[in-house]
Every structure is written in C-alpha cells, then in structure tokens.
Image (tube, rainbow, N blue to C red; front, side, top):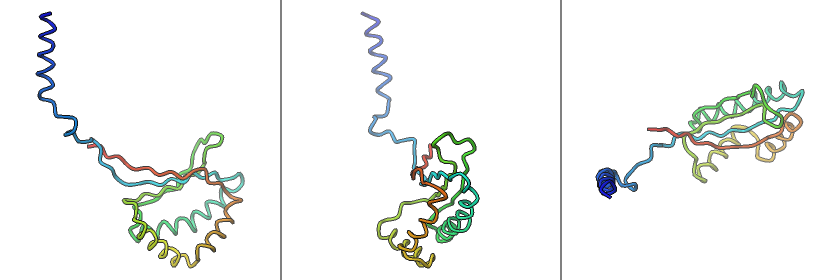
Length: 146
C-alpha cells in the first residue's frame, strides 16, 4: 500500500511540470506543394513522348518558372517499374495554391502564351493518346520538421 502511495506521488510530481497538450505546438511546418503526373509511356513510343516533353511540357514549365508560378520541375524515369506502374513521372513544385481568381488569370496568360485556345489544346492532347496513358495525378506537400 505504501508503494502505491509513493508511485502516485511520483506520477503527480512528474505530470505537474508537463506542458498541457493544448499548448504544445506541432513539430511540423508545411512547405512547398508537389504535383506528380504518373505516365505510362506505351511500348515503342518512349522517344516520341520524350520529344513532346522536351518541346512542349518543358516550354510550359519554363514559362511558369519565369513568371514565378512554380519553383521547379523535373522529369523522372522509373528504372524498374513493375507491371501496371508508370515508367515516367512529370513533377512540378510550387509554393502556394493560387486562389480561383488568380488561377483564372494565369490560365488566360497561359492561353495567350501558347497561342491556342482551350479547344485547340484539347485537340492537341489527343495526338499524345497513342504515345501514353495518364496513370494518376497526385499532389503532396512537404513537411519541414523543426
């Protein structure tokens, strides 16, 4: 019985100096966002699709980087993709998600830069269908631990 009283006193002493849970701050701060497009380049189309990426996708990314809309971008090949997994990743990193009004303003700038309207861009996208399929589109946010 005496040991239980001692244990209770020790527990009370240890917890009386603890910071209340509501006052504790998270160890995480949140950083940049990353969008990842997982591409399945079809057999025999690797070089054709890389030509598109080099001439069109990189042009779009460079424009967005120059405007300050993105931080950076990269193209990554899966060295050992398993059955059904993508063999190419198109990655874009940016600081913030724009408001709806800002996204529309940027879209208008983009349309002007591309010298095509949305209908023409959709038609151009059809030409990539024989080269690849889009596996997924994912978004991540960096966690910066203190």
